[in-house]
Structures are given as C-alpha cells and as structure tokens.
Image 1 (cartoon, rainbow, N blue to C red):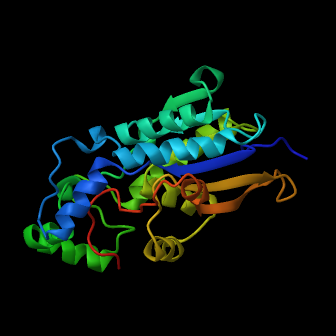
Image 2: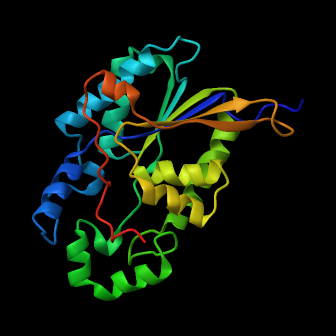
Image 3: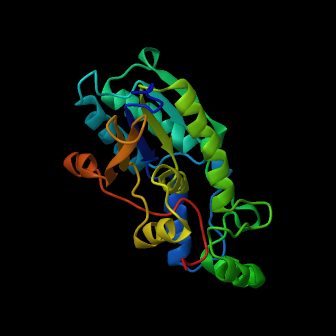
Length: 256
C-alpha cells in the first residue's frame, strides 16, 4: 500500500464556554442591540464554567493510554482557545514539552466584520439590508462587510489540512478552535456540500468542549482515509459534572 498521508487520529474540539457566550446570552435575553463586552473578540477569556469544562475534557484525554493521547496540538490564537488547550493539557497531565503545540491564525474564529458584537435584533435594526441579503444568499456564501463567509473560512482550512498531511502523517492531532471551525472541517473531511453542512449546523450548535473525531482506516481507498467516529461527544463533561453549554460564539442572523 502507498505511504499513509493522514494522521492516525484527528480530534476537533470547540473551546470552553467564554465570557462572550455569557454576555451574548444576557444581551439576547434583554433584546439589546449590542453585546456588552469590552475586549476584542480575540481577547475574550473563558468563563469559570469554561475553565471547568476544559479541565474535565483534559481528564478524559488523560485516561487514554500514552499511545492513544494527542502528540500534536494545534490551536486558534484566540485567548479562549489557547486557555482551553492549556487547561486540557493540564487536566490530562500532558506536559507541553512532550508534544508539539502550535498556535495557528488560520484556526481563528470567523470574522464578523460590521456585525461584530451585534445581536440578532441589533443586526436587523441597524443593517436591515444586510439581513435581507443574507436571507437571500444564505450563510454559507454571505460575507458581511469587513468579515468572512463560511467559504472564506473553508479556504484557509484547506491549507491547514495540507499542512497536517505534509507534517503530521501518522501522528495523533488535536485541533482546538471554534464552532464554525469544527463545522467547516467536517465539510472538508467528510466531503459534504452546502446543504449537508447547513443541515448539521441547523440541527444544533457545537457544544463547548465537545469532541468530534476521526480515525485512520488503512483499508479504505488507495492510501487509507480518515473515518468519522465521534460527533459532538460530551460524555466526559457530564461525568465530571461540568454543565454542557452550546451558545454560538458570536451573534449571527437567524439560521435559514
């Protein structure tokens, strides 16, 4: 058989609950136009609950044998993702010196541009023409002024996968990012189309600190393939009595 090009394992993890998630919920509940948070999106930290979620997930990884644990960790450079990765490693008892840890700007949150920090009500009130355009085009292709569409995110993730194939074949790779990062990786890895990935997104948000994972199967195709084996796995959080949360990372218009 030809040389394996994929990692042995690939885990996709959304960061723990952030202070931004909490502020967004409060603004939506009060029907306010703006989310009350002072930090830039990239500087928003985990909430106390988010820290507990990340530690609990780390304990789950720590229960794996050394041969099954991640050997490479790639994380978004946003603070909430970096904190999640570090707490996960601490909870697992996995020193950073014993693995490859990289921050990669291509794993950052989708950029919301003009709609940043606005609630659904705020977008509709301030930019009704954008809400109308998004409803017509759909969230997969719609790009807010100064922001990104899902297609833009997918484009940068294609280069991440090229790097993973080139540098981490045969490794066990953990990626810590954001809700849209998890879904866009699924689009690429499972070769989905627009309708399929939006159906997945419409059914439920990706829970904070949940695990979606793939295992390499050498029997598939000419060089083997990554096969989905867990989707939004949250059992370790429930076992550790860390509440499950699934708030969107940032305000968006209603799902189509």
